[in-house]
Image (cartoon, rainbow, N blue to C red; front, side, top):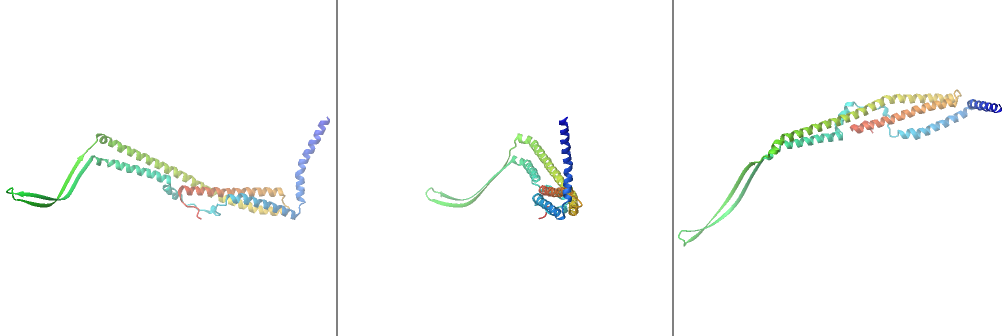
Length: 278
């Protein structure tokens, strides 16, 4: 019986202390003078300024100030620029290389024919000894120029090459067709990535203005709440709640600016189209 009585007294005292604590805080705030409220408000502003310098400024230090007012070019400009991408150009080069090999194979029938020819040019001197009586000999000399031509042609056709030639040409055509399909796949994949990046930038541009207006609204409301706190119309708890809402709105706005900047940079890398002008 004694233990139960002591327990009830202890619990009652604890609950009374918990309910009495906010009352004591409110009573302490009500006894604050105007100068003390101004000093408390200045301390809160210093903490907010320190937080903005460390967090917000470092996060968006490379983001242009007027990025939310950026006008995005039409989608067709970015889709047309896909052809200048290195991956797409490599696929096009592979197709052209295979086409050149196909042309060479089509002209290989010229190897069945052989042409040969020769040409010789020279001068000669001829010394002759003549005699009619076998006693009196005399010499004669003749000088001349000689041209010699030799032309010929031959045909050599391998039966294996002759019968396999249509199959070789068809194989080249199949390779060209497959490479063209690969090129189309690369372009479609690249266009899909460009479309996704473009939609992301468009969506973020549409929402960042609303977030900027929300942050501006909370900044204006914050000034009203600070004035009410100085005049004693609201307590420090209400002021802290207002500052927390304002901090959340500003943080959300700055994060949206950074996300928009990153999306624009990605779109520029995919298309080589300059959007942010330095």
